[in-house]
Length: 310
Length: 310
Image 1 (cartoon, rainbow over the protein chains, first blue to last red):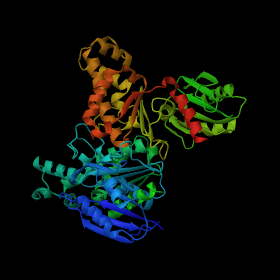
Image 2 (cartoon, rainbow over the protein chains, first blue to last red):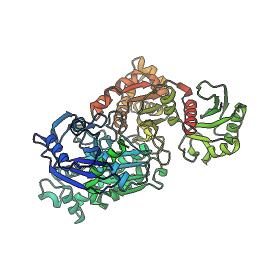
Image 3 (tube, rainbow over the protein chains, first blue to last red):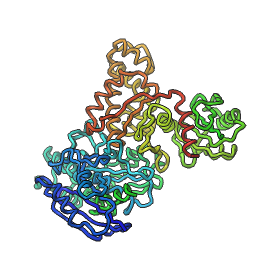
Image 4 (cartoon, each protein chain N blue to C red):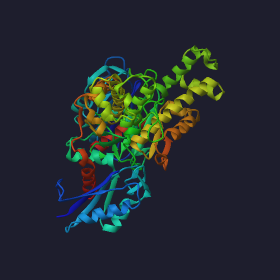
């Protein structure tokens, strides 16, 4: 019986888990601080894996990492969270060290794969996953296949331009879905409106978090409500585009900002209906929340390793 | 040795061709006026197929038709060119009549499939095809698989919104790629600018065609040149989005408007470089014209029938 090791590299923690053949319950688990901005991230990663290495044969290692990265070569190109990793061949290095195949893909793709295999998207052949958080990441299953693309950089759904006159994006471009709908984009809008003279209970907060804005909205603050309405409006435009492009049977929302619920999703659904190219896309379309929470990256890495070594 | 029959249903003509096992040169060919707005389109189609029916066994029939349609059930939902066909089960009807499997998909998907199997995209696993004509149609091959989607309505690339303040689209929505870059959209822009007082050699033309606008641009007309610059600019935004979404290794342009060449593609390439989310998408990306011309629909229908009955 061979085991699979899954790794989730995050900005604050590296998580490693060991799984028996077909199980998704780990038999061993390790959590290490990544100290991502300090030297030695790779060494800490290698040690965390070594710490859980089982006596049984290991079939493969799967890794979920922040991108952009090249899953075909297992190389992280450059990731804002880990300044040390520039064109860093993390999968080949681990493979050479541990003597087993190592497969790598970005965290949003891995969350999509996990939701498809083990979570909210089980049984669907056409899935779009969107995580709305500090950034916006996407993952797509099309005809039962993870969309990776030629350079392994497909499904960057947050970086679709939906307004050439839109605000700056974290990536350096502008008018992207992320620049309207991510947590920081919603907060920036609130700040700008206050600076422009709009009154709000948030005036006393120098940098309100999405959670604080949601709290203010629930207490009736007009600016806070309009900030989510605006994000929902643009999210509806974005998702109408994804429907015309992918025609999925399920749409899964993950990430912290998705947790605000109706504040975002009521205006989103109104905008989606208004902007959808043809009503047939909405027939039997499931729109739901991610089911796997913080384990999505780890379980996606597990699914990837199993899929690639099947 | 079994034969395959391919059909291309166009607004003006229905074309039918018979192919031997692995050949892409027809052994029989039939071209009939579709008279699409008059009754009896289905009967003319059935007769055109019967007219070329070979003595040998027929493996399957493939059909390229204008959409929107449902390839999973072989039903045309409603297509502007053929008012008679509303939720019309063309594939099941033909299958019952001729006693062989019949497979249907829209013309842009079929052109993409043809270019991939027999044309400019041979050997690529990740292909985006865009036809720029009266409308804008798209077809996508992702990981060696034709993207059809849950309802069979994926890859409607012309109906991605890229500007919420954009002009009306032929589909009834607005701000879509088609509403900036199709032939009629370019012509409308010229007309609007003339009405707004801009001088142009096109002033004497009540409804200039894209070919006439291209001629004026080549003769130095500033408005005509700016009309293609504007279309190229928005086409660059659209394609930058397709790269982030699909990460293809080849991008193929078909359709009449693509024939204008540098007038459109120089500003397009400048805009693409400016808007591409990450320069890595452009590494080894092939950008080329369609190779199969008017036969793309027919050859796509052939490829579909062979693929589905393999």
